[in-house]
Length: 143
Image (cartoon, rainbow, N blue to C red; front, side):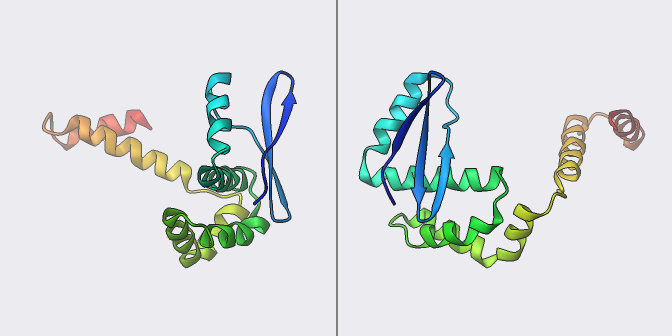
């Protein structure tokens, strides 16, 4: 892994890291310049720099849906000195086809999971209050 290249973009700090042959433009999701400066200072530490780079490059890879770079990231994570990254990479490798499909396909089960979450929340709120009739009305009104 290489060092950090600082770029000033419209008064806001941006960073670009190069991992192998991949170039990731990384903008930390922080609320103020002070927090960004803290992250830059932490990036100066050799041990933390690799962890920060791996974390942010994975976020970039997922958010931009770049399945072609997944294999390279998995190799970097497996060869990392950090045990959590090795374990995470092993877990992703074990379920490689599903992870690759999640990065490739536009379909998502997010709406279904959101609806299930809503139903469970209503059920918890209604616990012990009334019978199935009231719960049924509440579920119909919620949807």
